[in-house]
Length: 398
Image 1: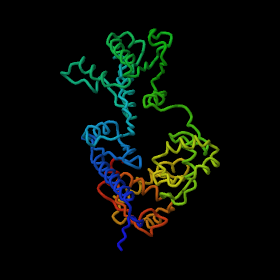
Image 2: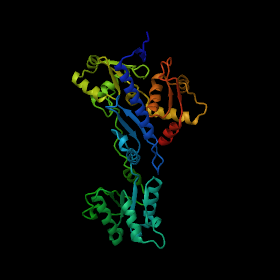
Image 3: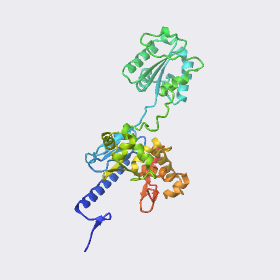
Image 4: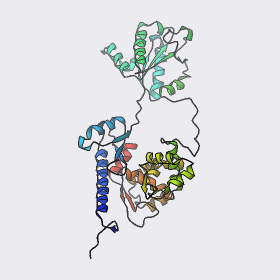
């Protein structure tokens, strides 16, 4: 008598359907990761990376990492047939660009201010750098005003009388009203009491010939705060971006895990209620919030490797994202770098609990080739090998 089995279990129509759906889900995830991962910004050269959220075709979502400009390219590249639910993290900050307005009597001081701005990484429009022989003065000024994020006017008893400076201030104030530029009046030997009415309500820093106050102004333009650094939040409630209840449950799994591997931790609802002091309703809602990080099986919840890659940074003295970049860079740059996790761990001095989330972080982004087989415990893989995607991963984060 012939007996068929799937995954070591007796064959049934239901098990066949589940296996087919699981295989289809895995194939679609891999295809979409490669499809999105192959998108490159045509100017910056940045590559996109995607992770999969969800456990089935019904709740599948893709989380895309990259700048907002790159993510817009990804959206345009995806055809309607490939359109799926997609989230993104786009962290771009526009570099500061200063338009420096000044009177001719203050030229030398203005030049030194412009040079200090430039030395501090602030792109600065200063007339003598921008306007060449034969140029249209008005057009050049218009271009400088159009692209500036900060309009800085050097106010002095002389410059406030100059029609050209006042015309530039008019344009700078319009940009402030339209919220397209910051307006910063910088006083030099100019009393606050003599400020025009429209400027009297603004903070107008004072500068002297020694530029002793210039660092504070540079910090303001770069958006650096003078507030003291926030202290660490209580260890029991770090700011994870998830609800307090979800954070508490994630913390249980992170702290209970011995190796940072899938199914390393199994939690029952009653146990979660007892240990977190949450209500059953709050636990149910939190587990739904964390559905990308847990799998429910027989009335218990198994933490996946994705959870440790995401949440270790809040409770452990390491960050899987930083560890993953280090690992990927060594794989790319060191031809003699080992591929066995046990040898990698020995080289780094890491326990499996730290290495496994870093490996999964790369695997989840299809940034390495991972060979899994039996007998690798306590490591989650047998071999970790670089690919072209590893190189792109490192270049996009360097």
